[in-house]
Image 1 (tube, rainbow, N blue to C red):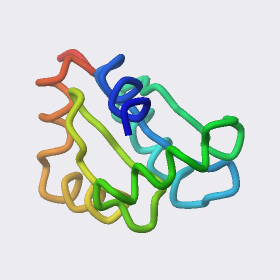
Image 2: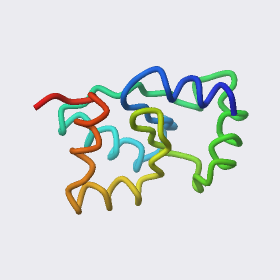
Image 3: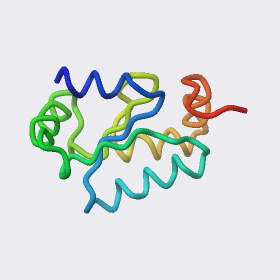
Length: 102
């Protein structure tokens, strides 16, 4: 859990993913299209990935990826991010966290 929190607080936007996850790809693409450059941590390429996956589940992320943090705060998984994008609040959250500038 400490490693997840540490990594999540190092950049304004952080996404925990797996390389084979299509929803992870979609969320990363959405962030890039909004102008953000999130830190990406692919759990299937990290030796501690399985432990981090369990820590993410402990935070309430089920499925465990994608898990999105903005400004060090856990936002949720794909459905949560899409909902925020649809209602227009995702972009403002990224601006407030200084992940994008306008």
